[in-house]
Amino acid sequence: MAPLWQSPVYKLKTPSGKEITIDVTTSISGGLAPSRVVTDVIVPLFLARGVHRIVDFGAGALRYTLPLLAAGFDVYAVEFQRAFQRDAAAHALAQARQFPNFYELVWPHEFLSNNVRFDAALLCYVIQTMPLPEERKKVINALKKKLKVESYLLYMARYNQVGGKISGKQRVSDGYFMWPKREEHSFYREFGTPETHQYYKSFGFHHIRSLSERGTDQMFLYGRGPAGFV
Image (cartoon, rainbow, N blue to C red):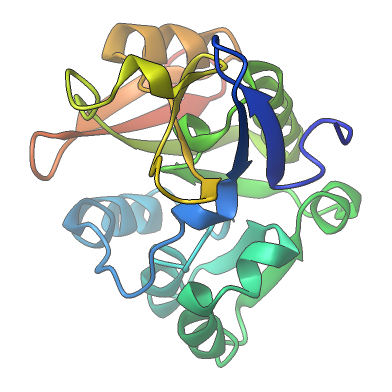
């Protein structure tokens, strides 16, 4: 296997020994409208708090990059080259490149070698699609190093999507591979709310606010900074 988080393609095995190919870029869906939580709550909040520079990590089809650009933020979209090249991202990428405040950073080298420090980071539907726990830790630590001392992290995930809907035969790593009839699969690992808060606390992020649009999602705003920073 390639070094941690260098490639979006994985060869993993189920408990029965069946080899599964996972390509995390297959999770990208184009043309989805951004959540109103971002446009109606996060954008005004970030503007009020003086946020200027945002990194959208695992930006996919730029669902959240575009409204942030339109609001005037400098937005750095981080993705694998393979993801940027997918048809699902092509139209949005062409739109984003029309903004002078848009920057694309190919993961890992362009992001890791960039010296820009960010006021806020977005992790929208990213962590739960990563198949290896140690890679999740690597990503959050890499983001933490790029964030300013006082900064924000917006985490978004789906909630209660597994239940009895997914066969135990799809178990792989600490989650499940999706779309069993395809040759290349995506990955999903569901995190409960207390687990999520404790997870980010272990990296030095404190929970500021919980948000939701449909009741089937998790939208948590975390802060990095001294006690009392909100």
